Amino acid sequence: MTSELVVDVQPKEISIALMEDKNLVEFQKEERNLSFAVGDMYLGRIKKLMPGLNACFVDIGSGKDAFLHYLDLGPQFHSYQKYVKQVISDRKKLFPISKATILPDIEKEGAISNIVKQGQEIIVQIVKEPISTKGPRLTCELSFAGRYLVLIPFNDKVSVSQKIKSGAERARLKQLLQSIKPKNFGVIVRTVAEGKRVAELDSELKSLLKHWEETITKVQKAAKLPALVFEETSRTVAMLRDLFNPSYENIFVNDESVFNEVRNYVEHIAPERVGIVKRYTGKLPIFDNFGITKQIKSSFGRTVSFKSGAYLIIEHTEALHVVDVNSGNRSKSANGQEANAMDVNLGAADELARQLRLRDMGGIIVVDFIDMGLAENRQKLYERMCQNMQKDRAKHNILPLSKFGLMQITRQRVRPSIDVTTDEDCPTCFGKGKIKPSILFTDSLENKIDYMVNKLGVKKFTLHIHPYVAAYVNQGIVSLKRKWQMKYGLGIKVIPDQSLSFLQYKFFDSHGQELDMKEESEMK
Image (cartoon, rainbow, N blue to C red; front, top):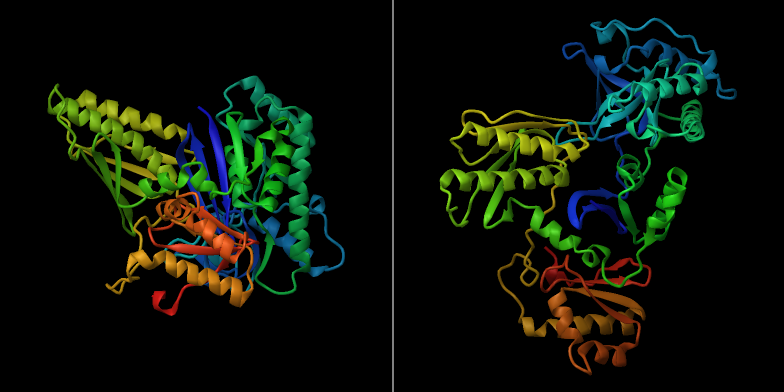
């Protein structure tokens, strides 16, 4: 299996697609000005205590107050809170963590009102992004994640991933990290550290320690609260950190700055693989070029077809996700209803595992498979689903089919599910019910080109239109595009864009910024 990462950087958002054997399996979309990402750390202030919930709300500058439960304070809360006071009390000289006093652990079943008070300053880390009506979820057990190691202040233990099975290798890694880690820091050794040399692990440990020093320096110098003191790496680099493996063939990026960021990261963790990071400079939109736009359009939405007419219906509610499996107009199997149901269900299990990763669906998922009479078939379906979900990085739990034919799945949710709208607004009537003559569409485009060139003085720009319209504009020896260039200059470029609906259009200047040329009648 080969993997490719395709990064589409736009002025307002960054989209990241992970392809396995040319099939889209993970898709992330992030607004470029988005804050409150998982892993970010804030110096905040406790706003309200909730003794009934044994929790408190913390002001970190988001629209909704963030939630911190007693169990998320961490056993070493007293130690790090005392250290924070020492750091804030002296704005000039930084108190070293190696000299910090380790106080006794807090009680496992204590009350939050006995530990913190309203108005108290506190360092917190986001573990869940705001979802629906809920604010961010916080923890005080700070951690700095790298590719091989996770650094945890005020924790003196070294833990090794359970997925490293070799006892000798586990002992080697544990002994190695015990010898190089500084005082008052704990370390979690990740699975990919297996077999790595001491120089590689020491280099990353120093990098993570530098992150800690920069964070605590920001805490010391914070002029007002709340303050962002540590920002997690960009979504692109964060995905690379968790996903990168030798099977990656290519990483394509269409933006110079993000390309350099990704290239520098790959050069840091795998210098021999830096050549796989490639700058995309093609004329077509990057997702169109790699066939991703079409897969997004067909994979998101309420109904998802998967094989021979069978399809899934996926419904999202506040409490859970519901999936119904339908055989559709699929022809009956010659082996009877049971074999037909089994075949459809196995196909549905394959597609559902892909959909869970693709949409990043979390919480409770209930799947209504087609009823099967044989117990061995129900067991085969359960085993197939478990096998498919092994590729999923999110923590999950799958239960066998119930007597009603329902499968229950729980999957870790740390950010809202990806929900891409595949339905297109009518570009000709804009919801008004009346349309202009479509034959005049190219005339309308020419009027806008004329206005831009002769009134606004924009000589170089790109016109993005639907591929069918682009084919019409480019057809013939003396095409419509050529006529426009002869009349208005050679700075006009026409690009077919699959993400646009039939009579939709977009103008971009030479810097990639969109030019709003919609008329008042086109506004909703």
